[in-house]
Amino acid sequence: MPHFQAWEEFTRAAEKLYLADPMKVRVVLKYRHCDGNLCIKVTDDVAHKCIAATNKIKPVEVESDPRNFVLQCLLYRTDQAQDVKKIEKFHSQLMRLMVAKESRSAAMETD
Image 1 (cartoon, rainbow, N blue to C red):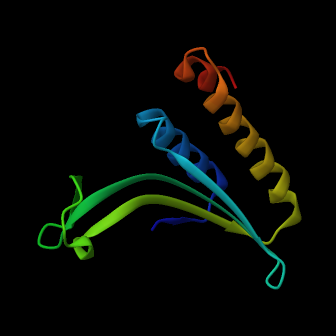
Image 2: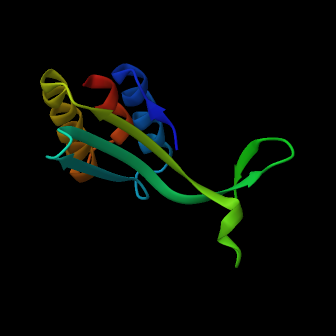
Image 3: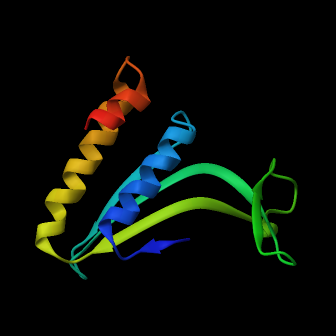
C-alpha cells in the first residue's frame, strides 16, 4: 500500500485512480485522537495479482487463494493542522464528482 509523503503526488494518484473507474472508487477518512493523525485512503477495490518473479502487478479476477492479491490503495497520513483543510477540500471535490451528472473528466480538469 503506497503511503504518500507529498500531498500533490497523492492527489494526482487519487484523481487518476478515480478517473480510471469512478464506480469502484472508495474514499475513507479516519481520525485517531490518541495519535492526532488524520488519514485519507482511496482504493478501487479491485484485486490485482502480484507476480513475485517480475514484481509486476496486473488486474485479474479474484480466485480462491487471496494471498497473492493486493488492492490498489493510496494512503496519506498527517498530523499537521494546516493539512486538514487540504484534505477537506479534496474530499469534497471527490464527493461532488461522484454525485455530478456531467462528464467527470471535464469537471476534474476545471477544479
